[in-house]
Length: 451
Image 1 (cartoon, rainbow, N blue to C red):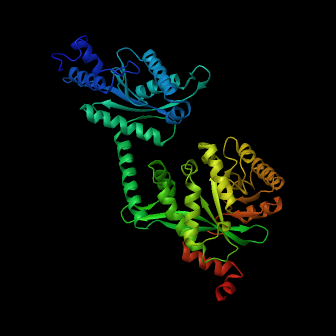
Image 2: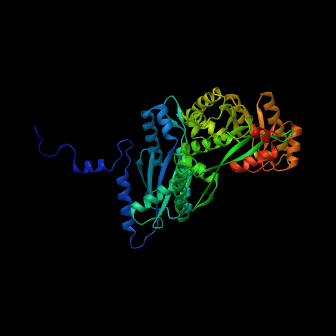
Image 3: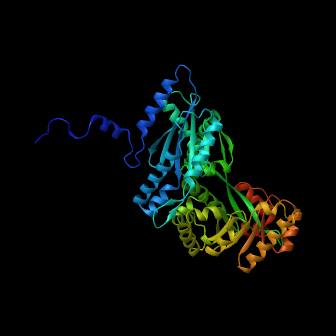
């Protein structure tokens, strides 16, 4: 039987409208409320467009907590976030739940960048306090993107897009960052997108190159291996630093494709080296969070035909700790197949010694920050001395990075450091130049070529 009239006769029109403008979980306004507040404020200031600000806040690392503790715990955290934000909002401000773990604000009395950053810092501090889940406490941080009317846009959609651009830049810079939109930031984000698209095409067309830097035995200067380093020169963008494009690929979700291409090229080049030389290759933090990483790496080596026992993978402490359990499994699987694992940039993390205890490594690479001052700074000398002695006790090989002077070599040799790498021994060069380097520096290479 068909019911006539209002399908919800007990709900008034005003109540229906309120429901349409409210977030059912937190009771805050929703995206429609935000839109109407911005449009109303802009209309009020149309004759004399006095500035105001909108902001989007995103909780850092909320999804893993939601996955770990469950959706009910996630909902409870979101409700606590909403309560805190309502309590700390300045007079006249509006807070809404924008989407998922994002919240948005209209701030009528924030007129410029300094004021926005001050409000952002206050909200960041409020949201960083522990969240009570009954039997446990959880800590979170938040990132913020601000846009100021009318400079960042006069229409709601444009203003919102500017705030999203600012938030995106905050997320790129790490956790708990605050960004106020500007034309410079917009240009920076536009260039990042241009680099991303060009890099994706370069991967497809096999246009990203691999260069190799020698790693030598310090006591006699004999080459023992090479580290593979990504290099890319685009027809339009020119040379793009790996410090720019590698993090970008990681951030935008295609580091696996880039790494697969680079590892394949590096492994193919290594086939032409003497068999006792190893290939050192860097893994990103994103790869150490992906359970399929070890399978992908071993599959690539198998297709190329390079013995896994000739491969060393370099990982940083930060990468290991991003997802420690998954990283531990990946490291174990790779080592079981003969791949060796190096802890890169040793000494720069907050708890490097703990990583040596918790994970099984084959080698430690001492960060160049210590090596560059080893002959001029007694503290650096003593730190390097202690690292070398500790690694000897733990039966770990040691590589000193960033060697540039003969005096560095002499000091490291006296301290008993096993291997070294840096401009003193050779700059990164392409595969063909690497073969020429071996002809000049590796005494058995010519004999091997004749076999």
